[in-house]
Image 1 (cartoon, helix red, strand yellow):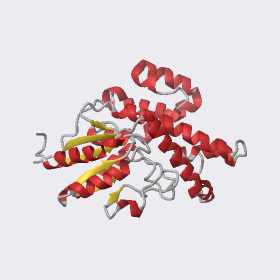
Image 2 (spheres, helix red, strand yellow; image 1 turned 90 degrees about the vertical axis):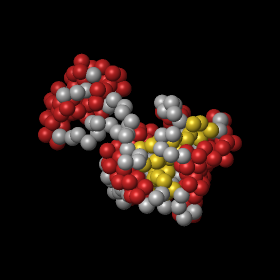
Image 3 (cartoon, one colour; image 1 turned 135 degrees about the horizontal axis):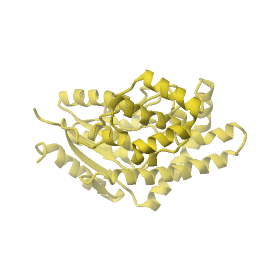
Amino acid sequence: MDKIKIVIIGGPTAGGKSEIAVRAAKLIGGEVISCDSMQIYKGMDIGTAKITTEEMQGVPHYMIDIADPKQEFSVYNFSEMAEKIIKDVSSRGKIPVIVGGTGLYVESLIYPLSFIAEKDDDVRARLYDEYERLGADHLYERLKQLDPDDAEKIHPNNVKRLLRALEIYEISGKTKTECAERVPNPAYDVGIFIINPPREELYAKIDARVEKMFSDGITDEVAGLLKNGADWNDQSMQAIGYKEFRPYFENAVPLDGVKEAIKRNTRRYAKRQVTWFKRYSNAKWYGSSEKNKMLDDIKTFAERKNDE
């Protein structure tokens, strides 16, 4: 059985991925699947720089506006839904174009994680009871003994991740590190294309995007989310562009302080995104002046036989 050919367009936020994805989809007969952990949420449009209907230019887009801001949404939820869409798009003779900067979402498609589907409410409840009785330090010390590599990645006070790591071990008998071995998805022939503007140019684009967010009414958008029941502790409200508003709404910082915090945090996030995509040795990288070359290479990949 032939592998499903998929195009992945990655890179830092504000780097121009969405525009390239639309152009690529029109060029190769593709449909776009968003790989952004915050554009899944309804009503969070300005702060996530969500693509507009006009910008889509008639190209079908998926995995946008599929969750309520109060809803928890995991990597497993994403991969399960996205893989069904990939199969559907491919079955109609179209090429799935995956676009976005959420590295773990990309990873879940290229290297399916063996542990992400495993959950056990009883085990989780027992571990949580133990946390309440003995504290996070006690559980963290246990994790350090079981899986020192994963423990290094988790802050001792990050209870959610701490409990999850221990839950995985109790369910599978393997540590999270052991479970997360990267085995390529055998169902896909993957082409990875990264747009990465020069840093100064990217930072200028980030600053301009944040300024536009404020002129477009991001403050009112956040106020509306809170009015409709969103809470600062919700997963959705942890997004850059939203979480920075908390001290403003608590009368602790002025609006200019919020704006600068969003710019700073977005720049840091962009840097982390670039670092993440460097893990893919088969990825092709392009500067902002190389978009036409990038599109040519995507077309060549789409037209060649699988794994040539």
